[in-house]
Length: 200
Image (cartoon, rainbow, N blue to C red):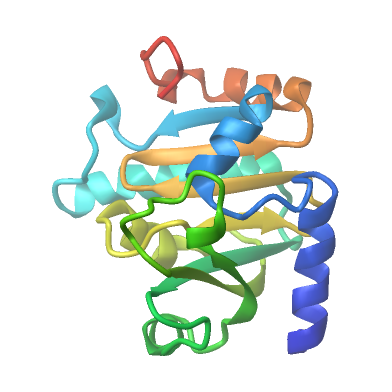
């Protein structure tokens, strides 16, 4: 997919269902709480996998949730994040080395957000996108890096804007188009839900 088309497609997928909100996972959870559900990656809500056998559990759970949301052959965007602290024109090497096909989607001036940390000074979040055809395992490299806290604020967004999944080190936050769609997904994977009263 050409760069300009890839960005426009993601803009369209994000604009209506997420009201063009800043694509920051923990902020989405607060804004769209009635459409959010969290699944944990490991039994007993353990955060980090201990070896490859437990990493396979992490991958199995993420792929199973994604299979519940989309069909093989559909287009899904992988959004990765990089930060800079001086200018929106940043060194993109950390992103392009991980995924050379990723292109810039948008930048967010974090210091201008309403709840910005005043002590951080000027700092930016830069988001990059790569569209892939969904099949089980296609996003495993990104999920692996997220699971061991190498990268953060990873988003998976489908081309129709029906859902967004944000893997993190410990689980995945899922945002659906409607509360009823969220409820269906939650019931499909109820064994992986948090026991926390707020679902965290």
